[in-house]
Structures are given as C-alpha cells and as structure tokens.
Amino acid sequence: MKKLLTISIVAATLFGSAAHAQVTVSDAWVRATVPQQKASGAFMQLQAAQDSRLVAASSPVTPAVEVHEMAMQDNVMRMRQVPAVALPAGKPVALKPGGYHIMLLNLTRQLKEGDTVPLTLVVEDAAGKRQTVAVSAPVRALNAGAPAAGGR
Image 1 (cartoon, rainbow, N blue to C red):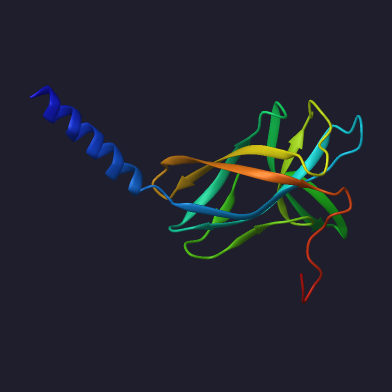
Image 2: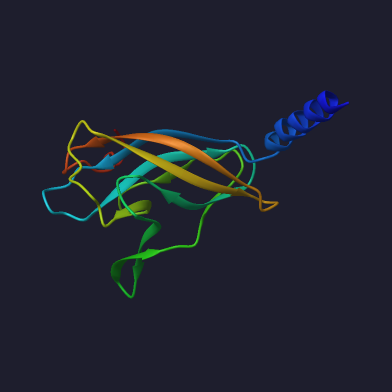
C-alpha cells in the first residue's frame, strides 16, 4: 500500500509539473565587466509553451538580480526594474540591450570574456504556479551588443 501511495505521489508530481509553463532559453549571454564594475546585464531569447511571466532571477555571482526594462520616458531613455516580463504562448521574447534584460547588481567579481555565469530564472504560469529554469550564460566582450538591424 505504501509503495502504491509513493508511486501515486510521484506520478502526480510529474503530471503536475507538466502543467507548468515550459520555457526554452536560447542565445543567453552576459556582458563582460571591467575591474571594480559592480553591475552587468544578462540577455537571451525566451519562449514559453503557455502564457507565462518571467518574475525573478538569481545568480551565485551576485546577491542582487533584477528584471529591468529600458524605455523612453519624457524623451529620455531610462532603465527601471519591472515586476515581470510577459511571455505569450509560443512567441519568442527577447531580453536584449536597450529593452528588457536581467541586471546583475553588486557583482562579487569581475566577469571576463569566456567565463560562464549561471542564472536561475523564475517563471510563473497563468495559474500562478512557478518553475525555475537553469541557464548557463557565456560572458561576451564588453562592447558586445544586440545584432544590428537587418542582420546578426
């Protein structure tokens, strides 16, 4: 009886997590820093199987990670923390320089080109269930940016 109960709990857990928003991550990267620089950005493409939201992130390279947006406000480009980024079902969402991105604040070390930064993204589905997505983002050169318009 105990074995059957255990199998039922495991099955319920597996099927329950299948209801969570499955999120794929591609082209993840982090911008390199100079010595003593305390912040950098992480960028990537996200795509969710069902309507979801990116609600948080974390990384062992810093105690503070925030989801941010760059946007024009009163004819001035401003960066601000946002509570979430919508991930519409089946549509790719770019986290990129000059738009939505993940800020790594109070860095504990310099991020050098060729390093890899582990990130954990927290995604919430429409029912409020959360899942984490592990990302391993390579560090690109300090002058790396978004692909030029019309090309890569």
